Image 1: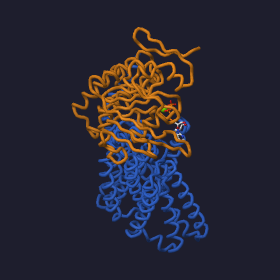
Image 2 (image 1 turned 30 degrees about the vertical axis):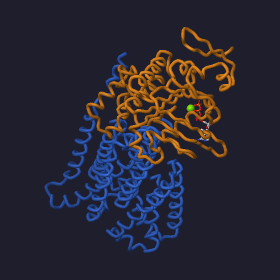
Image 3 (image 1 turned 120 degrees about the vertical axis):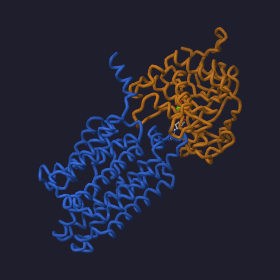
Image 4 (image 1 turned 90 degrees about the horizontal axis):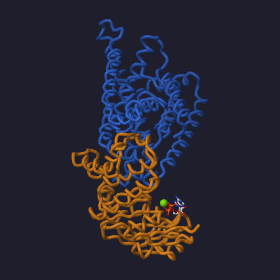
Length: 252
Length: 327
Ligand SMILES: Nc1ncnc2c1ncn2[C@@H]1O[C@H](COP(=O)(O)OP(=O)(O)OP(=O)(O)O)[C@@H](O)[C@H]1O
Ligand SMILES: [Mg+2]
């Protein structure tokens, strides 16, 4: 369970995240949308204890993220950052193996290896598993990082723009995977998405942010409307139902 | 296509072979150093050479470990712990000793007391500076290191100023101590140094899995349950001990760590600290012991090995910077 109450982040005078409260207690996919700089990554980072919280509190399974031991939280929540840099030169399999660190503390058991293999095949990385990360394309690398997060096998998962760099086939595969993890494994998943159509087709709930605040929060079908999207992004759009898929298109 | 296949296999390729080769090479260097030109005079040769060998192994290992770990902490492969300013303090302590106590004392002061005082002062300085700053929640290691650099410059200018006031004879004594040298190591200090370095090595050994995770970046490490600030504070403390002990033992060494660390990374990669550290230590022993044997026995060259190694290390540093840019 993820809970935030009045979370606030200040940089100088500007409130980058402004008293955001939300509760995610059901398995499912929640998409966060909003313009660049709305505070989506900042919100996720505070919940995942990657950034200090200025005001308010965040809880994972009832544990305050600022007071709980990191190793305890690492078994409950996993996070994919928008950008990832590495010092070590690792293979895809090495990297995904690190996802098991919270459980194995560095010594992979047979069960850990099985999880790693599962994550590798889930993300279509089998042919690349022994390649070095710096020899991969941006999208391949992105999938490797998502596989690491998946291998961590936590009940809650935060993904900041997991579709970065992915071609349409892999983007759809990623969203199906996210859907499956929520439906079959009962995970609570939060994804930051820029493509409203992916949010509309795969998310149960959509949260729209603007200037650090949550401006809309509701079931996907209720949020993806012309009025709401126009209000959030300040851009005229058309929303149409195409073969049962609610689709949003920009106006030329 | 063949390229892809080759690079696919590279991931699985064991690092065992280079490590075994390095170990054999290091052992042979040690054996040659002990036995070359001995002509059966063991009772004469061994008591002289054995302590020297132990000193080189200890110092090489300390420098290799501290540099590789320091590079992980700073996320940068062209830094060495000398940026922390610890050895600048060593220079200042040496200068102060000669300045105030005079040449006679300095010439005869390679004693346990001086060694312990120096080591404690350096460790104390590093822990005080970096411990307090990190304790105050400084998240930015670069800011920390910048402070280290500034303090280092301060110490160096102070030493430079005092050195101008020292009489020329004393200055010669002093200068000898400001370059690393293995010719003047005292046996009784080795035991203390070995214990300290051994304890730090054990401590680091237990931290290796966490350091592996830290090499993924601070945020990823946090999300995998490693506390980067705590790990950094502990590791910087341990590094300070290694650098202080090795500096107090033989004198300051700057570029040597860079040389062995980059050789180690290029030989066995950086996937596991256990492997990189082991390789770096072995390479350090090979360079020091092999280099000393070459200089002493073959070239009959009495220059301190430290100077030669710093020179080579400096060249490697330039080569890395030119090849890859500052990363
Ligand atoms: N270290 C920082 N110092 C000052 N301002 C910052 C800092 N980091 C982020 N910001 C500001 O905080 C705001 C929110 O940033 P954030 O990264 O959360 O946006 P985002 O919604 O994730 O945007 P994007 O869609 O581009 O990823 C931005 O206006 C950004 O300029
Ligand atoms: Mg963002």
